[in-house]
Length: 241
Image (tube, rainbow, N blue to C red):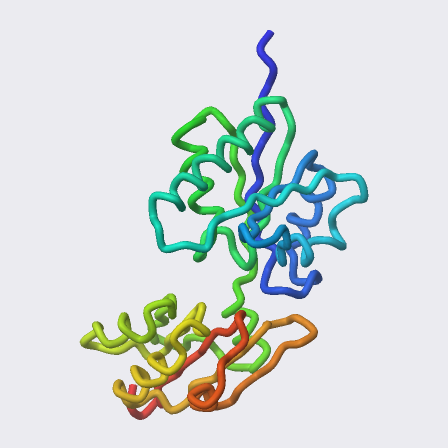
């Protein structure tokens, strides 16, 4: 009789505070046989594992998978496939596994690429994805500012290429979130100024972590570099919008 495969659970651990992990995610972490998480090829550290730590039982196997920090797309794709195969090998043994990711698994997450590769290589594997609180949701809460109201729009965009995506939009959304804003913060500021109307641009670093910092005016970053985990919430004035 063929052995039944295990289930893969994609778990978003939230922005940083272990108490922001969902009850469902905490329960699943207490039940799985092995936990996977992404790490840089430079080290084995995983912030996601650190956040989920209080919910991981002692003795549960935790394995970090190293991903290259490179712009070489072929090297990156190879890593996705290789790590997907590693996870599949454990699932085929009948083990239930979790893959941890910061924030939400379906929002700018390495898990999304792992998911697609597993679905392609082993479509018979059962997969359950558990949503998590995103860093921008938590950031909006910590500055007590609604992300959207009424019929407003919200643009969530990567800041890796600075403010290019905002510049490309003929009609600007009332609200913009720049993820990974540390990369090109000056260009993001420049794009927001060029667009005009964005009267409140707040930076939040290390959201919900002990060293969280709030910057009421992101122009402060024109003279200093932001922390690695920095995002920007920019809002147009209601009169301008």
